[in-house]
Image (cartoon, rainbow over all chains, first blue to last red):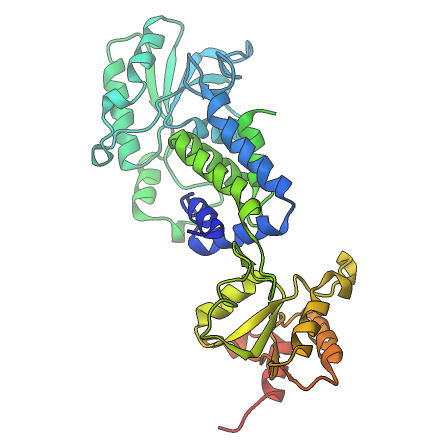
Length: 195
Length: 195
């Protein structure tokens, strides 16, 4: 395989990058100074060496504890459980949440061979048993697998002195009833609140 | 800068990849085995070492001559002039053309500081002067700069025993008159042919 095809097919393995985009990126890099490709290559090589999971919450970090677990201003009584470390970024960008996190590292997915033992469930139970947590907010995705995962966590936490909540489902802000799917509308109706 | 931010900002330098996509790709690579990031990094590192311009037509190749110049079945009397090596791929995919190519390496663009001396014009003139070429097809882009470049080449070739043609402009196949811009419609009208 030629060097161009080789790079293009490696790039095409990335999500959302098709064959044509991969070729376009390759030609772009060929037009740039070799320095740019080298810097990108080095960032790729150091990534997995430097980044590891936070020993407390499994967020990604280059230290022992992640930047949120190290922050004394975060409220440790609120514990938000997410599927992936990237979900933390989405919630942080919303700028509302002041508690801490726990990254499950995935979601229940029998078809992909992901069972309860593949998630960081025992570490989560350990954290809650140690005390100090008042509320566990299940922020797994509102998908079939995300719901099943939330249910599993809720069951495992039953009996512990902690309240388990689930993020609300409904119409997205700025969304349009006309274009919303039926399941979302049904959820939005059944979760209606007094004004 | 963290390793995640570093890779994300390198990826975001690529065309068509914004900040958010770059972060998503970075998290994706973190979920994959480090092997995938390493293979991508190696492809990036070997790219500029292995790939160089064809000594005859300036297409990209890993040999002395590119795959098209080496092919004895290509017709050397037809010479198609393109701006970039990537344009060759687009024409080859159309599967119609059986001649050879010449890559200018850009187009006239005074604003970007690209003048005639930055293109492979003298090599093109040399090829035509050597004889054997009957028709030079100008396939630079149908943009302002592409037209200016085509005009420049045509003037430089004036006096040599070769016909210079320009690829046709008009409505794209499958296109819609209603959504075509005025300049394209005007071109399509003035270039109309008997049915």
